Length: 116
Image 1 (spheres, rainbow, N blue to C red):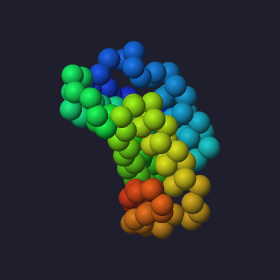
Image 2 (tube, helix red, strand yellow):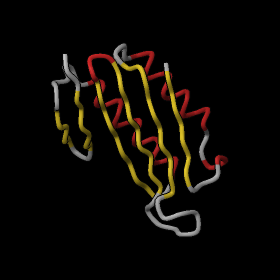
Image 3 (cartoon, one colour):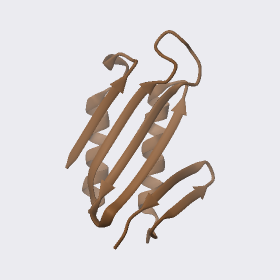
């Protein structure tokens, strides 16, 4: 299991790396083909501007060239993190995933790409 967490333009105290690692661990343990999750947390407009600019980007890679990217932006970073992981779980529950699927369901937008 490889989990990479990067935080830009915000203090680490605003984001709990331990809770993010726990969420990643749960997903990797439940879904065999996942090898790697990169989590990028950032304040898009910088720490001195308010607004809907807190971003959580999940980049998931795994066996058979599995590639899933999930992005969420919110005014609260914790909501952005929760929403991104909720969307990732929805994608992974979908069986079977087809190569180069573009998933557009409700407010769920992600690209799934893998080859057998």
